[in-house]
View 1 (cartoon, one colour):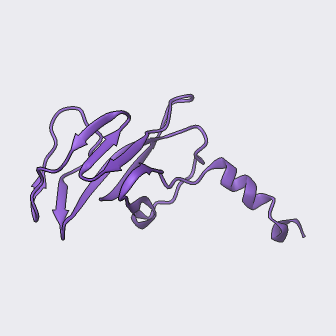
View 2 (view 1 turned 120 degrees about the vertical axis):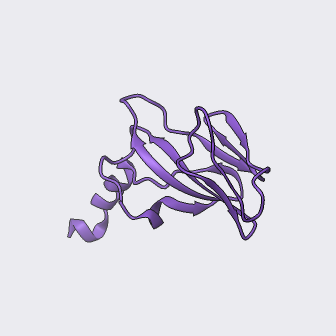
Length: 116
C-alpha cells in the first residue's frame, strides 16, 4: 500500500494519528478500513467521516491512498513540503509517520560536526 500523508498539527496534547496495515486493511486510530473492494485500475471515493484525502486507487496491484494525519507534540513546527518526503510504501504492521521530530533536531544540534 502506497500512503501519502497530508499532515496537520494537532492541538497541544492531542495524540498523533496511529496507523497500521494488514493486507488491504488500513487501520487509522483504531478504525479499520477494508480497501479490498477497490478493483485493479479502479478507484473509490470515500463517503462520511474518514481520514482519506481524495480517491483511493489501485494501480499495478498497489493500493494508493492519501491520508490526513495529525502530528503529535514531538513533531517539529516546520515540516518538508516535498510530496516525496510524505510518501511511503507500507506492507504489514505499524506505519510510522515520516515527520521531522524535535528529538531529531536535538541530535543534529549535538553532532560533533557542529560543536567544532
